[in-house]
Length: 236
Ligand code: CA
Image: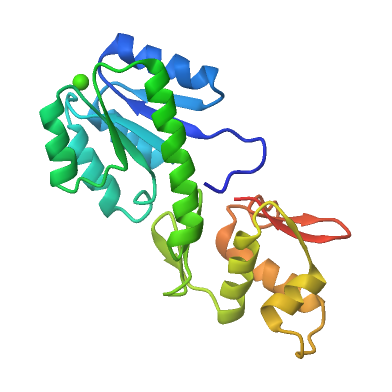
């Protein structure tokens, strides 16, 4: 996850058993997670689409829309396919479904389980997932923004954003160094190359173009922020 330092990881728990739901939510909150909940499958899917959680904890047997269906829908939507999912199952024999049907779940936990086991599972998936994103996939993801290095394509909320070559290279460099400040000189060297004489203002111009394509409000940027006197920083 590309989280801004200090910001909380958002977990959506979709579970219809109220006591269990409350216990899971309380345990996660106590561990510093930002938690939202849903008690049926339809509401759960709606929250996945509207709230962009960093992790989904998903019960299989749910009213209105079951967990395996939600899992498939999430995996087939480019704006949500990157979100890790931990399935909760009531019976051991459902594990076959989770694994065998290639539901797309990242992990599962069988009821009954202790809250300690649950939390350990959540932490492990978050750790593995951030590592996988950065090291094994050719994609970088920050909130609703997804950048594919091989295909050189960028998606925002699942919709492709057309970038020029230099805009793409610049965005990739910023995302790769997320939360770090990059000076104009460093950006010029990395994106435009050592030998190439380019005015430093070229960086500012390309940053402005990127903001116009990526920011909700380009005049008040939140993804690519200016660090006065130093350079730029990608925040998510
Ligand atoms: Ca259930």
